[in-house]
Image (cartoon, rainbow, N blue to C red; front, side):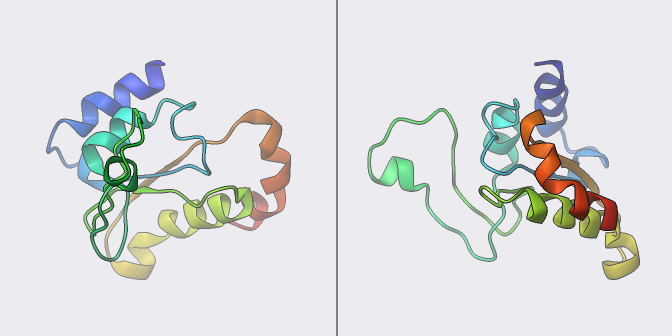
Length: 121
């Protein structure tokens, strides 16, 4: 919970750190306390997408309004993609000239699935 509260506090500000954080979570956003961050900073998509939960009147504690300025990426159930994406985001300064602070969350039992990608990333 402390992790989520720290990110929530950062998400409400416009400081230099908050603008560089990119979170990544393979379908465990809510259970790893990233919900408030995602609600404030939005999930990333190359073009804006309305929240399908609101559109179809489905109750959800998260807001899934995707935007180009979004700072969260949801690779679904794909721990390998999680680790490779975090590794690439960590190289953003070399690749794109802008430093990012990648933060990934995953539940312990699934770390084993991603060990090879973590090692290579």
